[in-house]
Length: 280
Image 1 (tube, rainbow, N blue to C red):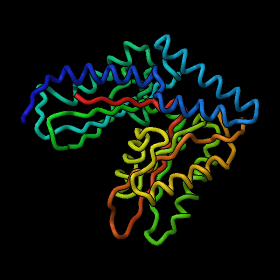
Image 2 (image 1 turned 60 degrees about the vertical axis):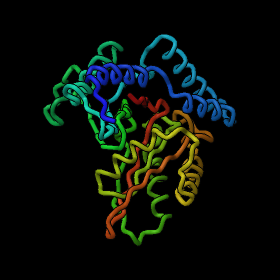
Image 3 (image 1 turned 90 degrees about the horizontal axis):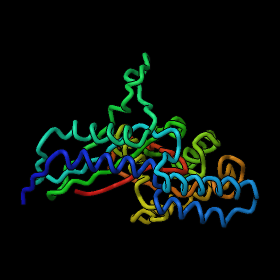
Image 4 (image 1 turned 60 degrees about the horizontal axis):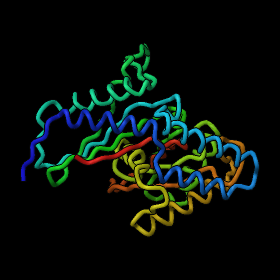
């Protein structure tokens, strides 16, 4: 059945989601941090996690940003093919993001040209990905992506003949080179397949999966566990002070790809992992 909604509903929802993402740590991430605190033996590691957990508590209670880098606004829209949006969808999304960053007093981190680098002062434009799906609803996912972890994320075009172990090494070495810069413990999203740009998009979308919920594909779930173990064996630890928990989890999304290629993208997300999701 065809359904019509006003674009203002999307604006309001985008605003609420970005405020939530920037101020309220996801319950699964918070639970993961608390679990990591119990599993740490070093006092420095425990202390680092205590500060991270306390910071999240204060941010939620006072509706303040979890981190001063409130990120670049990234939005994933899955719109039902039987849904009609009355108004300009792209403008509705941008307006919602702008309102959130203004209302929340979040830092404007976007420059209008990558070389001239003049701040837009609105944190716009957002990055928007759209997909058409069955139904008459619209699913909205938002990410406030800070660049401490974005700057250490990577992509590599593997050959189809490369062993899976080489992919594991690539991910582990990416985390090793990053060190403390992405504010560990991190959540690692990995995209495999598609084209170069599809793999990157998948790796970011992978972090929406609840922490600890493995892939439905058994061979991918095994790979997630193997990578997580190897990453934590690096012992970079919380805030880079050493310890048992360098990563809280690993999430892999895959997509069919070309017979001659195997793109793999690693998207590192900081301990805040600022995402939120809703369906209208």
